[in-house]
Length: 194
Image (cartoon, rainbow, N blue to C red; front, side):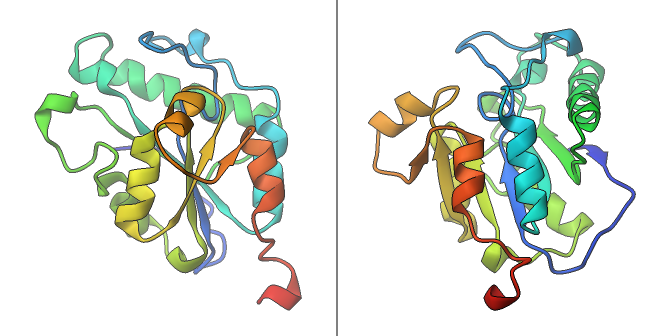
C-alpha cells in the first residue's frame, strides 16, 4: 500500500535503495509497535546515510511491514500518519524520500505484500522506472534479506534494531548501521562505473 509518493520523478532507470523502516531508519523495540507519529525517532546517523545514498544516485524507497494495523493496535490512518511523519522528519534533515510503502496486514492473512513477499517492491516498480540490477534491499530482519533474494537483488543487513539477532541466524553481509552501508555501496554518479 502506498503511503506517500514524491511528485518529482527523477531520472528513469536509476537504482533504488529499498529500505526497511523500523529498526533500520528509526529506533524500534522488539514487540513494541509504533502507533503514533510522535513515537517515531530516527537513528542519529540515518539522515547522513540517506544523503550519501542519494548523492550516489540511489532512489530512496521505504518498504515496511506494519502488522500493527492488521492486529488492531492502530488504524490505517495512524499508519499513514506515521509514514508522513517519517517523510517530514527526514525533510527537516535535508533528505527527500522518493516513496514510502507499507503492508498493513497481519502475518496470518497471507497477503502478497508482507515482506518477504514482493508486493511492496512490485508496487514501487509500477510507480517508478528503476534499475533493479543496481538496486538493493537493506534492513534489520531476515524478511528483508529474503525479499532481496526473491527479487534477485543484493540484500544487506544492518546491525541496528533486530539486526544482531538476524545476523546470529545466518551468514549475511552485515553493516554497523545504514551509514556504514551507504559508505560501502557503489557510487552510480561516478562516470567510471557507468
